[in-house]
Amino acid sequence: MTWEPDKPYNSLPPPPDADMLESRAVLKAAIGASTALAKLDQAAVSMRNPTVLINSIPVLEAQASSEIENIVTTTDELFRHIDDDAAAADPATRETLRYRTALRAGFALTQERGLTASTASAVCSTIKAREMRFRAIPGTRIANPGTGEVIYSPPEGRDLIADKLTEWERFVHNDVDSLNPLVRMAAAHYQFEAIHPYSDGNGRTGRILNVLMLVEAGLLRMPVLYLSRYLIDTKNEYYRLLLAVTSEQAWEEWLLYILAGIESTSLTTLHKIDAIHELQDSFGQRSRAVSRGAAHSEFQSLLFEQPYCRINTVVERCDVSRPTATSWLSALVDAGLLQDVKIGRERLFINRRFLELLARAEPPQT
Image 1 (cartoon, rainbow, N blue to C red):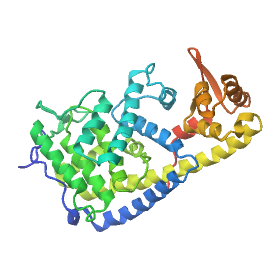
Image 2: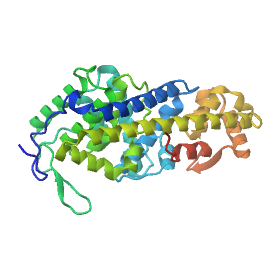
Image 3: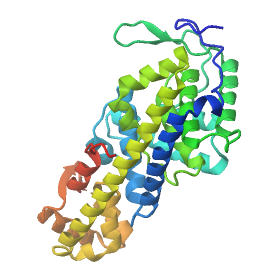
Image 4: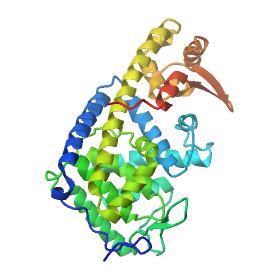
């Protein structure tokens, strides 16, 4: 059956084998991407406090991935509400933070029982805060946002979608040594998005599955690849190349695009890790000169696990009284190292330079 944009692509084939996917150009690009990713993985696990990345990168990933879907919130809002279940946050911030929760849940499920179609459903359900089942109602069409022209119609029917996801799952796991794992991830991402199994949340779910595939393949020990920023910076190319695989079987261009993103993102994240180390050293030296608490290693760690800190958190983590915790934090405010803001009855202490470092766009690295 020939693909037609306005008709359900029920004959969507599984991804091709390695002979078609692994061209010379793709394998060359995969070497660079693999090397950069390995350096990122090693740098992440070698950090003096890896929690810095475990807490922050998923939040930044959530922000960028949600922005692709036109769900826009600020880094400031996300980190401000990260510890209080976002009860007081606006709807966009709450939905974005659910992405972070979904990434963590998917990471745990992948470690426990591997990456499966049920993992995808659990991830999507967490993102949308309701049980997400495969689409059963026909009529899903994807249109050009500018012209309204239908450009793709995914497969229809709950049973057919389940079969297509079984094919996707088989591709993810079968003959794992026969295909470069980064090439496999890129091809599987196209396949998942082409199946479009849910009524909503497919893009965000697919982007989480990318990271989980790398974790399952043993290429990442923590979910710290911040790929969604690359995708949003090249959004038009992303959608153009996805469609080109469907319409022209243009696999090589798509794979090269994703591999370039993995390499670029890994290198920019490495640059961010270096900047975090420099800031921690500078902050530590300056804080020890003004606050007795700065000598407490747990206190120093806490101030970089996320940009916002609460008095109660210091009390619990450092096993000190509330007056002592308040004194430690206030001394850093007086020295200009932290900024405090009052939210209701609570004081929040902001490591502003750390927040700005996390939020800033790193220059492309080569």
